[in-house]
Image 1 (cartoon, rainbow, N blue to C red):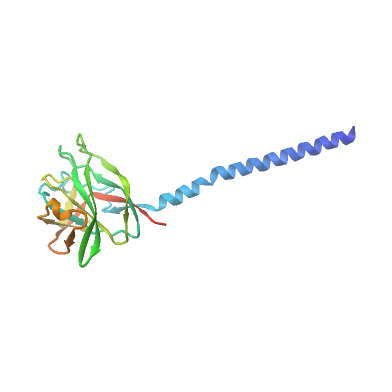
Image 2: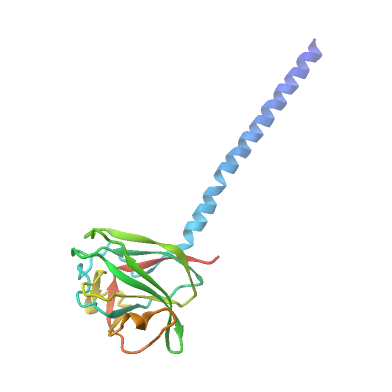
Length: 208
């Protein structure tokens, strides 16, 4: 009888030890995904003017923006993908509508790599930030730039101009027709002027 009791005690001790070991292992598995998620989130950044906690000098946007190409000199920090666009809604009652361009340096100018039509603000929002998720990621290379263009008047993006700009990395030029900014077209690095901050940025994920 004593031998049977000792056998039962050994079995119970072994059962408790195995159960504790399995419980610890399950906790470890449950915690594993968190560091990976944090590491993935760290690779996502915004490219462009940092307009968080900023108020634009011109909240209604550039009212004379018709047929202007606005070039934003915030180069991609490496190869990766553009997955979205963030911009501050302007204060007027006109829907935001513009073309996003990705430009690649080429022969002292730029080549249009992508052209995306962004026309989503209906009814128009007059406050807050709009984030547009692109229908598919845009593959970009280090030193690519972005620009925006619109056919009509009534600037879509709030901005700071000239002496009131903080970065002053955005410049513009008038006279671009739709056919001048098609994919594959070359844009010369001349004729651009101004020092502006457009309340616009890209959501960029760098290639590991």
